[in-house]
Structures are given as C-alpha cells and as structure tokens.
Length: 227
Image (cartoon, helix red, strand yellow):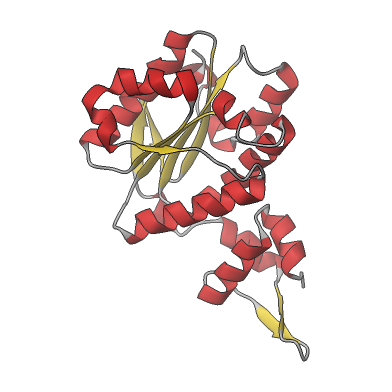
C-alpha cells in the first residue's frame, strides 16, 4: 500500500492530483488509521494508467498515418519550414472540424504559427506556463483538459514547441521530467499531442530522453516524424 506521496511519484504527478482523483472516485483509495489517510494499491495505480477502451476508439490523421486518441508523439526538425510541415495541417484540420486546438509557444515561434494559420488562428488556444515546475504545468493541464472534456470535446489537439516550453521551466531537466509526467497524465484525456523538437536547440542526450518520453512514436516509422 502506497501513501499519497508515493502514489504521486509512481504516477509522476502532483500529490494534489492524486487527492483530487481519489476524492472524485477516479482512482481507488483506502482510508486507514485514525486520521483516515489515503492508501493506494500499486495494481490500482497501474490500472489507472490504462484508459478505458472507449477512450481509444478515435484517431486523427497525421502525416498520412492514423494516430490513436489518446496519443502523444514527438517530431524533430532542422529548419523553420520543416517545423511547420506537419503541425500546420494538423492544427488546420482540427480548427475546421471545430475541435479544441492548443498551441504552447511564445515569441517568434508563436508569430510564425499565427501567420501560417491566418484567420483560423482566432480559434486557437495559446498556452504559456508560468509555474516553472513539472508539477505546476501538469496541474494546469489537468484543469484545462478537464474543462474541455466537460464542455463536450471528444478530441483535443495539442502542439507543443519544446524550445519555447524549455523557457517556461526552471531548467531543461525539469522540462523533460514534465514530458515524462505528461505522457502518463494525458492517457486520461482524448488528446492528440505533437511535441516539436528543434534539433538546433537541443543536444543529443536531451533528444534521446525526449524520444523515450513518447512511446507512441515507436508504433510508427520514426522517419515520418523527422523534418
């Protein structure tokens, strides 16, 4: 039996998320002792990571392949044009279909997207994290995604420009911890996520760790996502 802190480390989320999921009944918990502290079975935590089959029934088209929802992919690019090749059609299709579309970017990168999307960008949600930690970013995502699902969203498209996101965290290592935590958290929501890595901005060690944080990528030919 794991306590709240141990369960949070196991799922790579915040303790606040564990308490919220337990109190809402999404995550099975027991109460022990006079203080009625929460305790969690590891098997229940493992089961929590595997979404219900219905959550996997949809897919979205991306670069000629069908990506299941939920899905969490990484793309690498070496030129500004290469960075737009896959994500602009991905977002445009979602905006035309009336699906919630979210972009995490800032500065020149954000301007590049807004220019490429044109008038359609009016319906795009722009996100910039301010907390500086993986836990704060995951908590913010949980709130946003839960609100979108409550509003009736069946597919949520997300593009994260990681060279921008790195500036939103205290360190590159913290950003990569966030990527690992996001992969687990996102399984609970109907998301199609594309994390974009400009290889001019990251070294090989960071890129290998980033790719390992996107296991869905290895269900496809990885060359599809190199630009």
